Amino acid sequence: MTAIGYDAPGGAEVLRPETVPVPAPGPGQVLVRVAFAGVNRPDVVQRQGLYPPPPGASPIPGLEIAGDVVAAGEGAEELVGQTVCALVSGGGYAEYCLAEAGHCLPVPPGLSLAEAAALPETLFTVWHNVFERGWVKDGETILVHGGTSGIGTMAIQLGKLFGVTVIVTCGGPAKCARALELGAAHAIDYKASDFVEEVRRITGGRGVHMVLDMVAGDYVPRNLKCLAEDGRHVTIAVQGGARAELNMAVVMARRYTLTGSTLRPRSTAFKALLAQEIAANAWPLVEEGKLRPVMDRTFPLREAAAAHAHMEAGEHVGKIVLEV
Image (tube, rainbow, N blue to C red):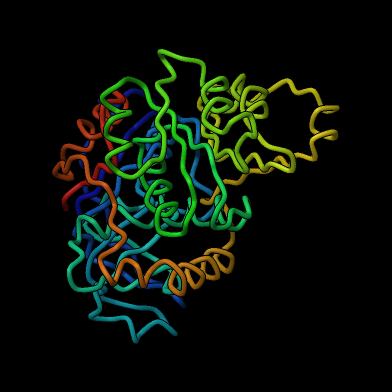
């Protein structure tokens, strides 16, 4: 089969098509003939050599796919012939990819395969970190950085559907306008104003109940200034640096909760449980047509390097996918 690989870490240009064996599904696994694969920021970080695959995972980039199940290992035979999308630990940038049966979700009528491939990574990530780790409930207000990213656009939509007010930060007036169109209650241009002061103004000085942070670094103490008492700070990426200096006396006095997670290295069992939560609570909204990913651009599989360059340019809104 054709897959996308690279000889050594580097810029987007290191990605190139290669011919590799089709993998064979083991117990509880299915082999998916990939129609589309999602492109995500962790793929870029992996290509740069900064996010190696977990033990046992495919070295081929790609964390979400959609397509037809063409073979199965023991215990997963009932999925053969079904059209699914799946969260995978790697291997998505290829004509065929292995997925755990418990990490697959059925593609309902009305959802294109391109859209289906753009759902798992962001939906699993936002659901777990906002609702499970961040304990967000209806009537609360949250701050989400990167409002027009795949994660940001998913957070906006889930917030709307579950009664959560979403404030986002974006880089520039055009992106702010797009975030508002998608349903953000407020969009702050972080290049033109101080988001801490803007959150204080928007919330009447009360602050937000949770911050979903992809930046870390020097954003963390600023994020804490945005939190109401008993606020929760959830970190899912460290694009601004892995270290932060905090006043822990403030954390204690205001009873903050600081947490975070990375999804890829979590156990097969954990991700299967998360898939069940999503199937019960969010997937009916997909089936009803109320929840859809925001789509940016589609590239052919062989142009994965161009897709990565497009993501790194930072001008996209929503999801980038590869057509296989």
